[in-house]
Amino acid sequence: MPAAYPTSAEPLPWLYNLSITYSLVSIDMNAPLQQSTNADPAEVQKFSDLAHRWWDPNSEFKPLHEINPLRTRWIDQTIGLAGKKIIDIGCGGGLLSEAMATQGADVTGIDLSDKALGVAKLHLLESGVKVDYRHIAAETMAAEHPGSFDAVTCLEMLEHVPDPQQTIDACAKLVKAGGDVFLSTLNRNPKAYLFAIIGAEYVLNMLPKGTHDYAKFIKPAELIRMARHAGLDLVSMMGMSYNPLTKVYSLGNDTSVNYMVHLRRSA
Image (cartoon, rainbow, N blue to C red; front, side):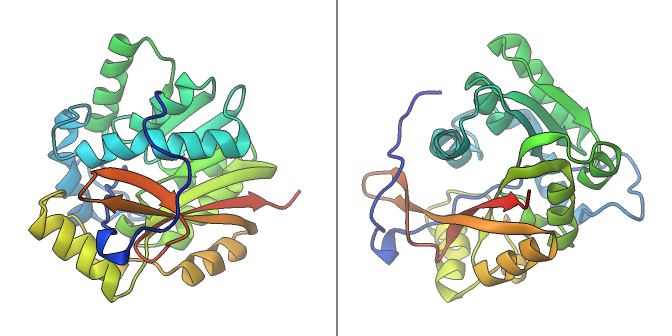
């Protein structure tokens, strides 16, 4: 994956921060949900309809295509992806899964959408990359394969599930002792509402209207508390910003809108 974006930057002025998050988890809307499934059918429906456009860089997923090199490089520089056994929770159409596999990781991508997984598997035929895609819930995978992965990624998903704690618990169970967990989500404050919803969805039309529900945004302190409850310790936190003038995404210290965390399970 080409390094198209810087790996770090000073925080941009707050007027230039915009949310660019998409849910990478969805469910086959034609299949009945089990009562224990940690998923909101209403949230799922919004993204299921777009599955066939996942790999179109000019579609509704354009921002996700543009941030993918940035977040992949951050993970790679943090833990070194080559040779690592990684599970990507809520992999959707496989953008992050393929990018990590390209860097030499042994990647398993899981999702609850047959449609999204079909798109992901089809793209492998074009790219020649190897990823093991599975139709399975994170909680089920954690019960069947505890402590099996060097690292877990769950990006742009927590703000779209009914119970984030349940998902984080599954991440903690899947990773090996001393292993790494990467999460990303949206902060909950007036600025995040202004840029993630008003700015990104209604002014700049970067995201489809209705992509986000402000009530589901998660403050960093809340996320860290949930992580600690799951037995994960905070290693680092990184903000993500967008400059609409230069159309460049960058990482920095401003976590007021988009942010990512690197967690580690105690050895």
